[in-house]
Length: 138
Image (cartoon, one colour):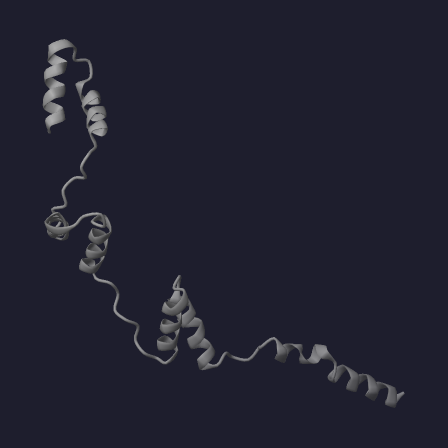
């Protein structure tokens, strides 16, 4: 009977369930694992080479590159809006856009007509013609 109890105890000690606690990782994470988790969270939506570079720097303990400034954001936005402009028109637009004096987008003739018609409201006859003429000029 004693041999049977000893065999049962040995079987229980060496069963997979006994090792499950260690296998699950009940140990504290290593410093590298903690750093990896933090860097993954900081990486956010970065993808491809940008993510690889960020993760490499982050895991090495290097500070990430400074965030984009408001002026850089404005430059990016203005550049996107000026993609089809060239020469002096582009220079003027970029100057105005970067200084915050961005002109209102130009309306097509059809858009102007629609806007003026709405503004004309109930006007009729010569009064409407005069109003529409002035409205379409501006």
